[in-house]
Amino acid sequence: MPDGFQPEGIAIGAGPFAFVGSMADGSIYRADLRTGRGAIFSRGPGTPSLGMKLDARGRLFVAGGTGGDARVLDSGTGRVLASYRLATGPAFVNDVILTRDAAWFTDSTNPVLYKLPLSGGGRLPAAAVRVPLTGDLVYGEGFNANGITPTPDGKGLLAVQSNTGDLFRVTWSGATRRVDLHGESLREGDGLLLRGRTLYAVQNRLNAVAVVRLNAAGTEGRVVRRVGDPRFDVPATVAVSGSRLYLPNARFDTSPTPTTPYDVVAIPIPEGER
Image (cartoon, rainbow, N blue to C red; front, top):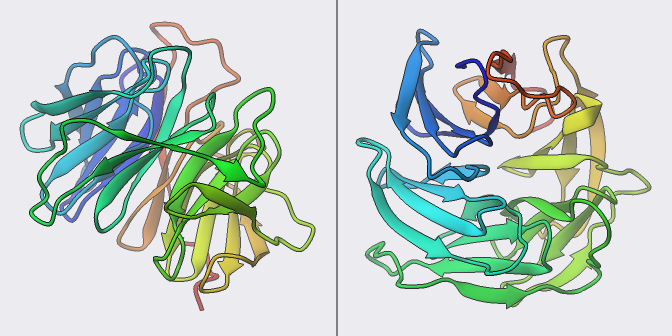
């Protein structure tokens, strides 16, 4: 990655390209996974670009962190297709997931999800819908709801609370229920990736990826292993391409400067999907 870039989110589509967002200024870097080479293809607005997801139409949905917003970009040109003001006060719009009919964004500061309804033709909405979080998930000091992904059966959402290590099942209306992890914790949980019934949960400051085997409804799971790598330096999230997981080293424990080096680490997909 470019020096001083401060990577956080990553998205990988069907092609050989990865898109990485900058916490520093919101720029998006596009890298060719075949060569590792890349360049900034979309200059940021001066506020962060955190969690990102690509849809089948090549649109890149970007969570805006402390900017309290979200953007949708054309992944071919970098052009901003739409921008959404999600919060007017303090906010930390942290991650995003795409379901069949919506994009869902977490806010680590405010107990709410932001929903961008997507029509059958994929048309972008004029505004986002606020969905208050109720039930077991109670916000406290620090980072709260962070990584988000669908349940294995596709009938709800899963969100990790970074400061407590709890995982929650979330209904479309925002009702939350703590997932039974049988005494385990996902403390420092950040980005989530679901493949089948296997959840990969990045535990950033622990420099680990927890491999969690879930039931179909996402109400119960077991941590079957944790995977580390000597190259990890506080990875923030994870995306998959082929037989590898790709994790940007956010280096949250390193004071950023314009010359601080950053990279993305690739590891084999850990066992746990069977």
